[in-house]
Image (cartoon, rainbow, N blue to C red):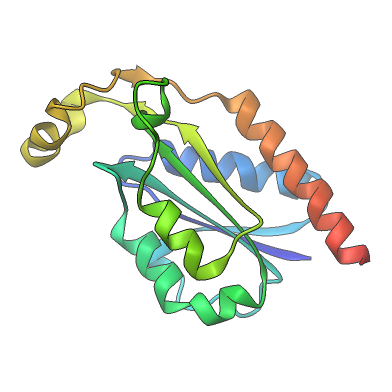
Length: 165
């Protein structure tokens, strides 16, 4: 089974999540391509697609959003999962609602997973700093690669089951 993991990532921490997912699926025997969402012209040729994005101010990266919107019909014909990575999933004081909830309505993924991300305040531009100032998210790398690995492995189990169905 050929799987695409497409990701919208500005600073690379969400791309690292996508690469981990791709590595785990590859280790389970799947043919996997991990691509930046901006480089994906079509999802044809893939039986399963995983689309993920970093979240800034509740919004997905534009390239990941456009990938879903431009390929919605084709994605409805495939097995699809989505994931987001952001700091609003850090604790119960933030609801964790973002643009991915709306995007998932377009393509009906098997699952929409939300991972806590990483935030290096020094790498943000002035606009990004102003946008998140009121949110006051925790700074640092809060990604849980054990959780990411486990999620990817569960995807592999589901993909095998779907291939046998």
